[in-house]
Image (cartoon, rainbow, N blue to C red; front, side):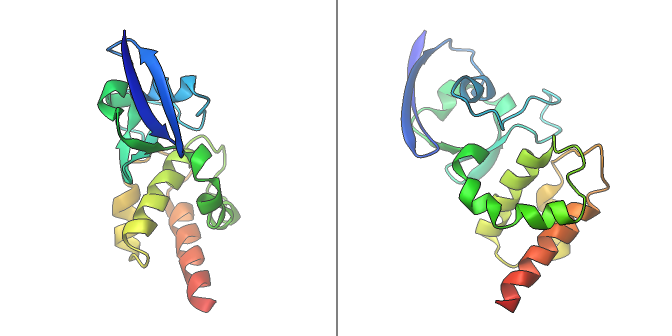
Length: 153
């Protein structure tokens, strides 16, 4: 067992874990249930979190590697996410909703990095997210409508 400390969603969390504990399992054990296990092969994006403001796949990282870092899950970014998730929902892009947390986390990272992305830049940033219900165009339209609404303000 090893002890790690992570700044999780703005709170310092210390815990004793097995050396082979994955970050996804650590996060879920601390009630971050938006972080989902999908493919376990780093292909779906369901486990996306922000570590030091960079999107990472928590299913492929040992929790011990996150020690001393700042990790945010959707639970810690509700206010920021609430500004645009309705625009995505309005496009019917969240049919089952299972992939939404990964899309939202990557959209937050994209908009922090590039507040006025082109459609191709949005597609490139979201390319690592798997959605079995839609053709991704709904997510793109929702993000584009959100960005257009900001310009109108």
